[in-house]
Length: 352
Ligand code: FUC
Image (tube, rainbow, N blue to C red; front, side):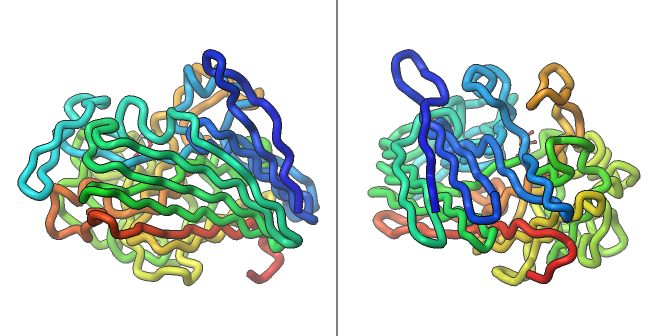
């Protein structure tokens, strides 16, 4: 399988490289070393039409000026940390308050806003782009020198995998994810409101007005948060549940996964026939239906708007450092972190 490399743009004098991995079925994944951002993902619909299924831009300037975390790796800690502060091993750490009083998606710069080191590997049935970043002690306020590696791999079986690795010389926090906004209609023809989502999840996390977890875990039963038998995304827009209203209509919630590596998340667009099956090691997924996406900008020639994409952010439960009842994701000194999330890019008429 092949990887092609080109220059996507420059930040001052430093080139930002773009890599496109292509498989035998014409599936393509393009990513850049700025934020390990996936800029395009091209897959066939049920008629074999090859179209893009993620939100992104074709130029670096738009990523620098406008991107609401399109396609990038967010970290060290994805989501919000209440009060932008936390205690760890008897010390108090202060982080950037980049959303009101709180810390969001790793801070002012974070993993999403920096150029990573990059390389690629080609094999017969798979190819990978490998990104590394050395995050020094104190970067964005977090303790520990942290060596990070993120690998994007596409196979000839239409599987796309993200492997995450990290190791720190001090105990620290690490909760990374990829922030791709999927839209399976193809070239952003429609919003995602008619996409259907099926998830192995019995519980979701209640949020407050700052979109921070309250600490309460709610049952999905009899709510618009029940995706166990599959339902359209618009259920969350039509719902009067206070949690759907709170986030502006739709979802911006962590769902606790009741299974791993067992087709736990399945997104489908009935009209194009495209499907996306997600499997992960992570304990939860933040489902964000682009409720805050405004129409000020065009995305690949299409006006950006609310509900134009859906993020399926596999990760540990946000703000667990402040909620002892949530599974912890503290990364201990010198212990490697590793996790994988797999995305199977399919069509409805086939079996996985
Ligand atoms: C998601 C959401 C946030 C935010 C951001 C761009 O992860 O949880 O609310 O809008 O992305």
